Amino acid sequence: MKIRNPRTGIYDYNLLVDSNDVIVAKSIEIRNAQKAWNENGVEKRVATVQKWLESLKKYQNEIAEQLSIDTARKSISAVEVAGVLGVLQAWCYRAPQLLSPADERPSMSANTVMVQQQWIPYDVVGVISPWNFPLLLALIDTVPALLAGCGVLLKPSEVTPRFMDGLEKSINEVPELSKVLKVVRGGAEAGKAVVQNADAICFTGSVPTGKKIGAVCAERFIPAFLELGGKDPAVVLADADLEVATDAVLRSCVGATGQACQSLERIYVDQTIYDDFVHLITDKAEEVTLTINPEEGQMGPLIFEAQAIKIQEQIDDAVSKGAEILTGGKVETIDGGLWCRPTVLIHVDHSMKVMTEETFGPIIPIMAFSTEDEALELANDSIYGLSSSVFSTNKEKAIEIASKMEVGAVSINDGSLTNKVFDAEKNSFKESGINGSRMGDAGFLRFFRRKAMLIQTAKPETMANFEEKQ
Ligand code: NAD
Image 1 (spheres, rainbow, N blue to C red):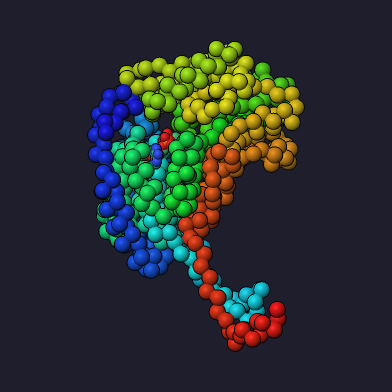
Image 2 (spheres, rainbow, N blue to C red):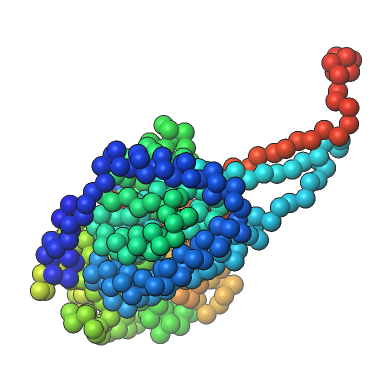
């Protein structure tokens, strides 16, 4: 596959796609090695993952450089690699605590029976990830799955594939790991092959693809952990600190060029502060600088051409239905890259795609509300339920509103905190996803099936006894 460079628009990288046979062979190799990987115990797995951590550190600059070409983001790429090293460290610390053997205990319902619980990991977990944070989203499920004792067949996005070269080098330096963690290159066809050759799937990506994968997993009778898109709302109450709210909303909407699942994408502001909010955030949005020179600036180009087209379509749709652009407002080509300046839209409503469909770009559509009930109705009027924000100087009031939002996590007086807080369990609501939390302890525990050893300590009931009781 020819891969486009988001900064230049030039197709300058060849992705050598794995054939179905290669993917099947990789899954068999993992399956053959997984038993020993699991039986070695969690302490040995932690030791191996720690070796990998050292190896990743060795390739840290190379991977960051590849990621910065994949995403056209320099400092964010460096932070992404550092963040992933932190994820490895955190799970190496937490996994053994969660797996400490539970004592044998008497059953509460049958007091002559002792119970031992075993934890059986899935043999091969397929991880399929998107392009917006290529390394982080490739490894966020991979690391806990490995530490749980699973093998992992990992297929990152074909849109941002360069980092796989550095990642694979780091894996190959740790031979015991390379037997149970294999990278698959390719697009949808490779993804389909992963789904066919794994025993559980962790998928991060769009709702339409997630639904297709969920259907295939249901047919194959394997679990699918789906982390999908969002349309995160922010509700700004009348008593909010306007500086705090506008700073946080702007950063959440346009940080990483809005290409994050937990970016705020629709803003509802109390009508008594609406004008002030709009003026202030528009002024701040106009000050955001572009990274046309990669060494400076705050916001990069759009990574994926197809997404840039969608963003322009949403802006056009909104304008044709009466929206007004206060700043930004169009996707433009600069030196071959596709750029969209932070775009503030007013006079928006829910007849417009920009208020109902995922945008994945630096757009800030703002609507006024007159009552808290109306704000909640608007915020909950969505097929998505990933996360949201509430801004208020009254913490109790903010939590009261947040508790009524149909989402898995709410940032209070900030935006997108789920990209920083990995230890709070959260489910995705509605079409934003399904199955166990990826965050917190559940993010590890979901890779096990529980098995019970039920040990009779008394003489078993005889058939005669059994009959007497009828
Ligand atoms: P996508 O659904 O187009 O692709 C995601 C991955 O699925 C890619 O690796 C792709 O090759 C693969 N794929 C495509 N079709 C497949 C099929 N039929 N079977 C198996 N694999 C298949 O998503 P994308 O455009 O790469 O990513 C953007 C989306 O990801 C956005 O909707 C965003 O909100 C979402 N996302 C969600 C989270 C989260 O944690 N909830 C995080 C980041 C991104």
